[in-house]
Length: 137
Image 1 (tube, rainbow, N blue to C red):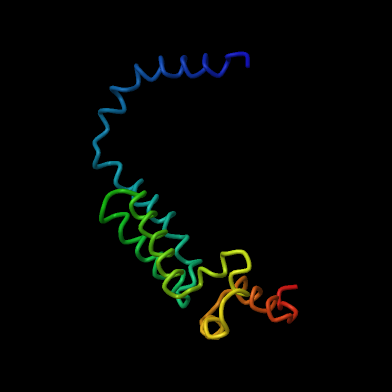
Image 2: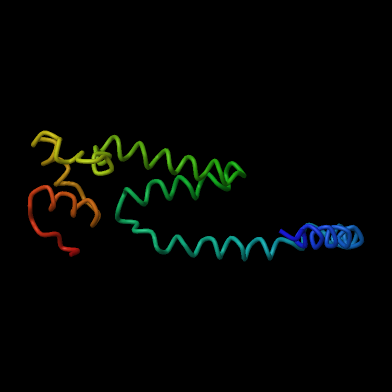
């Protein structure tokens, strides 16, 4: 509210004018090792993916492969989210995200959904619909 933030930004922008030629003289080849380390730190998150669960594995692979292939992070993320949505729709697991979706499905579809490899949240919805105590409680 005092405007001190704007003054600090103005001061550092003014100082950056003098350092711009110095930073511009650094060859782009020397930034490679830093970018490799950024990639390593980003790849650490791949270890937490359950690769046996296709609901996690397929969208993750699409995301990871499309980011470097298209040179755009947003394309990879969007493709991963679209892949996840399509898998949920095609396997009918979208009903777990709808209010009272599982309960309103016919018994044939309920049996189909029970036979799938479900995560804990989805198993809890089935247990609640059947009146069984959930394993997470």
